[in-house]
Length: 320
Length: 150
Image (cartoon, rainbow over all chains, first blue to last red; front, top):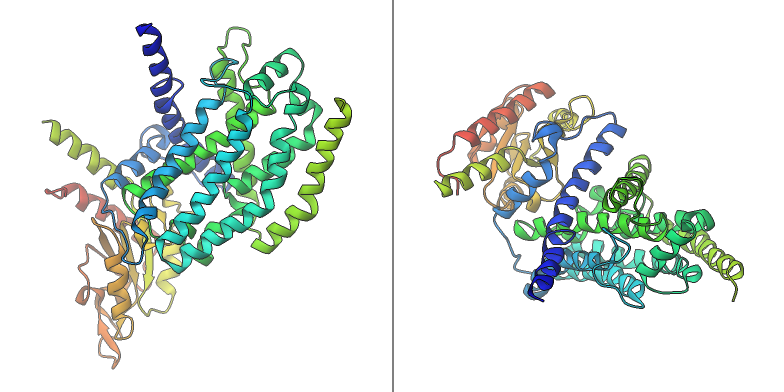
């Protein structure tokens, strides 16, 4: 009984829990910076550790010991809450995603709906953090973030729920199980894969959809006023969200963790995660920024009809 | 011994992650172009972990170009105070170093060191990107030699 509790604690805190995910997030930031650098014909981080692999950790440690400034105009409580929530929400969501085996750490009927809820709450937090800073750039950034949510939220929810139709369940674990018994969902719903990739780019505020933190217009968007520990937590939270989005896509559409020959399931899962990450970073590096009205118009004119089409097709294919 | 190790790690992190914010105090844009050139693929200082940040709240280093005019004095002080401690300043170009050739202008106060303390001077009109990178390297050397880390 005691040993079972210890094993569960180890799973939550170390592997595949908090420690493993935080290290994975640091590795993902290094990969993002290196891939972006190579696409732009640069080297990226080079001298911090082997091939610059310790660069995100150096940034993190430096930010931990910087002065922590709270502006006079800021709303003290929400200014403090935003970094903590932005860091802890994606970390919590990870316990619902199957990584080492078909079953996730916790699973129940309807955890997919909880995941969509968490994604929305994160964006609401960005909006709140922007307003609590009391800076004009932050307020504009927060408003843009919330406006963008009106565009990508509906196709995102449609494509998150489409894989649930053939599996007949709202549980991520059941969907992964169904994919291993039948086929990967990307083969039957390729349109949905494209839509969810686009929507995740918007959710993560990566370049074609990074109007909320456009550096040339509004400095850094809603995180303009944050410094020190708070900025460190926000940056780490952003990286965790990046890994969370990639692993959610690879669990929903690419079959999740499965045993292949002698490779353990976690290896296969990480390979899939980094394939999705590479796709997203390449899209980020080769596109220019859309205006906020272009984002909204494009989402409502093209992405939502496509998402509805995918939903209806799946419904017809798998029976009412 | 334990505290010493923590200090070493902190110093290692600080010298490898300099985030720069850039402020023009009334120059001719020549130095600005050369400063921005060090972030381009040809020179790419992200190799050393140096990045250009828009917000002074995220920055460690203030890179100043141009002679300080009377009008910009208060703005320079505001930007300097917005940077969280520990902070460093680099003066880029002869104007920022001493105010020349505008040193006796009716609206010019002089070099940047009359307003805020400066760590590294990079002279030149404008300095080449290599010279600016050398200036950053000197700043890193200075940070490594600093005794009290707080």
